[in-house]
Length: 261
Image 1 (cartoon, rainbow, N blue to C red):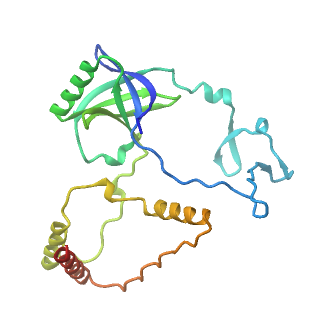
Image 2 (cartoon, helix red, strand yellow; image 1 turned 120 degrees about the horizontal axis):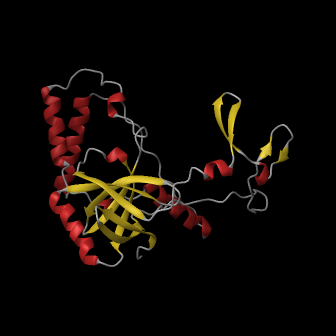
Image 3 (tube, rainbow, N blue to C red; image 1 turned 90 degrees about the vertical axis):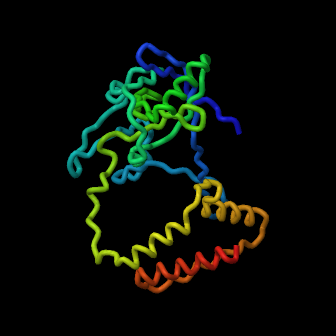
């Protein structure tokens, strides 16, 4: 399926203006359900009800409120919120270029592909410069009434723009509780290293399917044809064992699989 453009913009780096088209780099594959009445299987609708008057509240009676303390709200109307909308813009402004780092994945929110909208030579020149320098641009832009900050990087021969989370949204790993328990023994450490070495391989995304969605699709297909779906029995829970025992069992299992392969 060809990627469709969802937004047009212009990358601006100093005096350089580079028109681009923005495409979604990911696609949601969630299976969605409708709510049906049990008796006649007709779709039902949800409605908002005033709990005191026990009546349905119409859309023009609804207001947004922010609770500042229990039972006390600041009410905001559409006019208030409209004044907060950013000025419309098609600019993707590059603020600076920084070294590519694999340590800030928690900041990444959603990736987009950028394709040239004319002037392909300039587009690929910027791509090649980013790839050769191993740097990415820190960008900011406005799209659909929302401010974005992100990373402009070279990826697979094209430019990719990754929307990133804002400060305050990412939890620092340092806030996690400190590990407890005894330190690894030399034998446990060696066995853990052997286990990692035996599982070393390249990452193939096609090898990792959404098992739940796959089984749910099969269940829907079977029921739509009046067939019986055979549910898999859950695996029995293994009793707790020592780390050394678990590592030993894992190594034995992997060695057997390698021999049979």
